[in-house]
Image 1: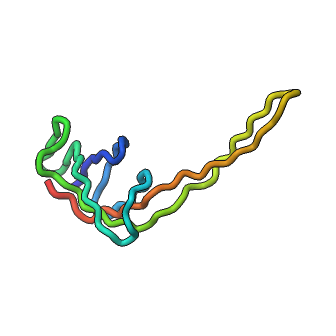
Image 2: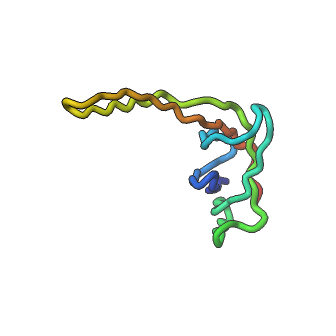
Image 3: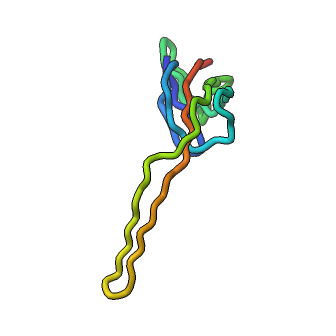
Amino acid sequence: MYGIVEVKGHQYKVKTGDIIDVQKMDAEVGSTVELDQVLFVGGDTPKVGTPTVAGAKVTAEVVRQARSRKVIVFVRKPGRYQKKNGHRQPYTGLKIKEIKA
């Protein structure tokens, strides 16, 4: 069984046991999070939500709070200036425990 969930404006296809990286959530490592924005549940009898499937929930465990690889941004205006800047986006790793239809 798999499902499509929406987390902070992004959609993810999830199965039990998957680890997904989502935008940073305010949750401690080891805590349990319930995702109730389930858009689709697949399996023997697929259910499509309008816009969400009523009563469906995905239970996930927070496995890590980290930051992604550094992205270097280099701006150069010939004859004027140059600037080098870096950015690391924080994210939360979720391990999918259960999909309830």
